[in-house]
Length: 237
Image (cartoon, rainbow, N blue to C red):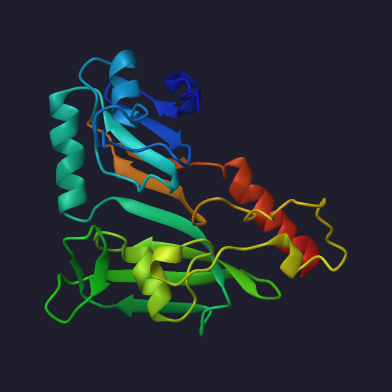
């Protein structure tokens, strides 16, 4: 798959920061030698000293901030450390959460296998959730992580038994159109593919303070796969 042009991903830029709308299936950092280029590698072809302020999972799309020089990087790093950055994600879940607004506070620890899990001895983790829309068997949920633990939103949604669509690592099954569409026919010999080929999580908004003290708030539109999934669920509810 051809890597995207970095310039096409930019949704905000000034002298200090770049915010991109990261597409799914693009790693934030290099995972291992020989794989497709990471977002950071693409960014450094555009701005030599670019540094990522935070990470998004490879499958997660949406708003991600990069600093263009060391002073800007220190400034944004401190904001993440002090929990001064506002992050809003949207997720499509299996089933609707138990409440319209709720908070999950469950400790998380990482494992050697690259997964994370809820654990009493883990690090504190808190996520605020708001159910935006409910469909026949799914929901569109707004997620605001207060802390930034590995796989936090995914684990906390699984904890309330509404895992993210396509998040097979944490109990979220793939979604197939045939489960909604009564007259769904495949050609002979064809196998139905999942409607979305990743877990349905998108970093919708990002808010932080620039070096001049002015607030910066960015909205990242849904990529095509996430948008079509939401539109399809609305159509068949």
